[in-house]
Length: 201
Image 1 (cartoon, helix red, strand yellow):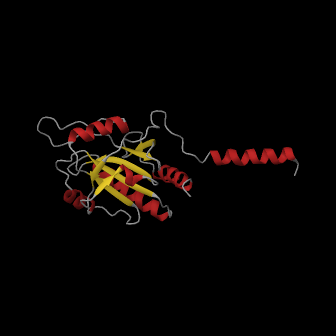
Image 2: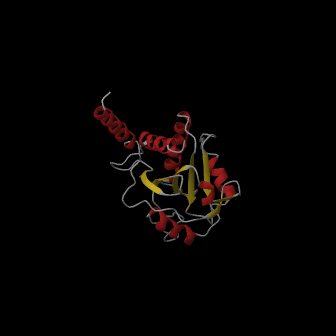
Image 3: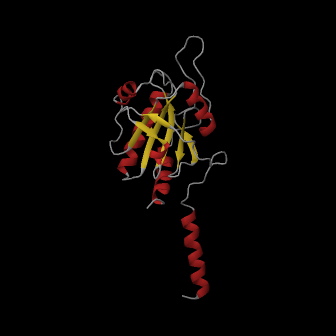
């Protein structure tokens, strides 16, 4: 093979490899602030425990009567698909936006209503106060969490699912529930996770 032809072939290979990378959305690229919380097993879990894995994060609360049940079901089915693809080094982390109600026991019971893959780690976070998660959501995920109004127990929060790399950097977000023209895209998420976990090996 001539030198020029070899060079072109190498450039094409490198170009093809580059297309597998997941592009960071313009308003992300920030590293998540450090945190320490309690999970559904009443164990301490912190940002340090996320290192070396790709994560999908969202926000829920157990008394939610609108978006949380379908979003949690979507996430459950996503864990099953990720597992069926044989993907490793991937975890799910859900931050409660109603930590006063969502004790570890309550979160554990909530998770028992679903059937996520046992091979995909899923951490449910609580153990902080409402003001903390309100500020954390805004500073890190660029989304609003608003306290219940007029005697309601319904917390307003975003339904995004956030892709976080092995260094704790936010990469992009996805729609967590079907709404209008936006649909939950299992295939897109799985393909992005495939690309990012492949870079870990």
